[in-house]
Length: 412
Image 1 (tube, rainbow, N blue to C red):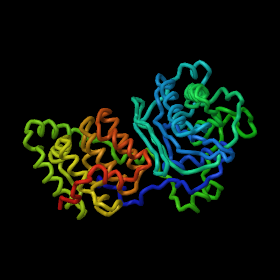
Image 2: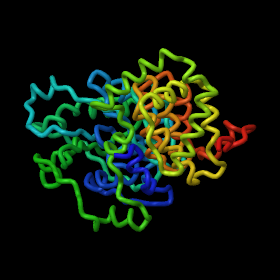
Image 3: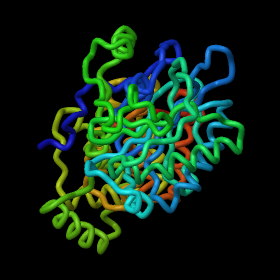
Image 4: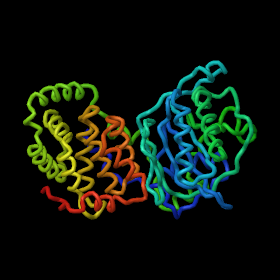
């Protein structure tokens, strides 16, 4: 299969600040989240900050990787602080867990652990805000507007499925930290195994013990509003993450050997040689030839570890965001990211994020930049780009600030 498979698609788009979804129930909340962030979350915590005012507008929507149980308290504190900085005075929480279906007893619930993923989603939107990863994994925000649902103060249900029970302490931690900062948790749901459960409602008429199946029809009010706004069906976050998966199976062994051989000849990835080779591959990729041999891929990945090379190729993008060559470069960086191992994969992943953002694909940009931060948490350009993507700035404005004196498209 071609390593650029999937990149001839239309970039995924999320709710714009002008779009309005009326969220009046937990079911509406669960259905609205993928449209608000642009992807169907997996192993994630999504927080819809509710702004003060009579109409209870939802502000920037935050998505974070599902933290490990030992990090529940720190993660909840991180979330609450982010919400305060966005001006939120209320919040609706959706926790997404995957793959666990069996019942759980009280003892198992208390002793259980949940798994974290290496994913991140998010979407473009005016007025978005995000903090840096802060050691907890990258967090993302998106714009879009929704009307908030009424809250509930009922005791959470017991006897829930494994994932739902195990993640209840995270919900409790979020409630505690938000309350300390004057933020009311209006609703909290857990989504698992194609169903959702409410942590805040014990009324079996609306929130049954067996959970409520996720809506799949496209004729609901939420779906109809999204279609009217011109939004495509949200992508799967897991599928986007797989676009950047590292080498596997036989290719993994070939790449490991290639890196061992190439590191023995530093001249093979010196800056001048790397820039010339990347320019040549750019032309080839533009013509549809996207194959790169393992040894050459290893040389290019190691060459991108030089900040001078990385900065030079970042300036190859055209002055007009979204032009065809941005997708060509995205394909090139993606192939190299899929031929790299951490921490060396951080530079090509960062470049892929830059290309995706420039091509108006904020969702994919967040996935890539989070991958870069996972590969190397201290990689400065990835941290800067993560903050920029989650700011109100556009890619064009950031490019002007970074490359004010640069001549773009210097490579053939």
